[in-house]
Length: 243
Image 1 (spheres, rainbow, N blue to C red):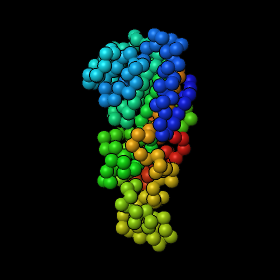
Image 2 (cartoon, one colour):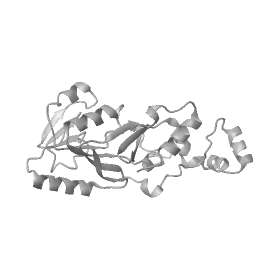
Image 3 (tube, helix red, strand yellow):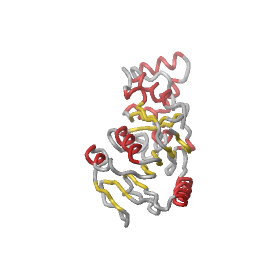
Image 4 (tube, one colour):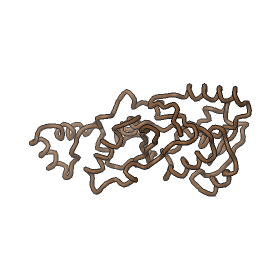
């Protein structure tokens, strides 16, 4: 079990080099791209695509829904040397079955998702955090990919809440005023301390290469806590470590 290379900015050049080396060792290496129709960026090395939509390629294309266990099970008798899954997991309802299936059918692979800095920033609009269609924020901590649900409270981190952030990081009287103005206001205040604005840009991503297998889990068992304060700590503390 090993995650052999990782980044929270960009590393696709290293993936191309990995696949070049793989082809040199094994010219017939089979490479699966899961959900690559939107951007078949590795078509030179891919031998099979699995996607809901047709792919503009001469490679084999398996049309189907990777979230459907029947589609995944139809490929369980096959084996690939490498699997690519780029900006897919953040969009689907339940990433775990897809992650587990990927490790069953491939010996190694590459996964990329938006990094956590992007998903709490106004990357697409000042009105909501991150990319509007995404369901999950991911963090890579050691050998474990962790997922945390994107919930409406993330709107609290918007920059236009600056006045509230200032109140909550002020002295006792200001914090008390913040609680009067916003009942059950978040206790920590301000933007997440781990947020790096330099990493909250289009084109940057959390990505890693894995070999054999890796761990996956939902942060806190996917339980968000009893109230808004607990949920805020979920994002502040649960995403603090790792990439």
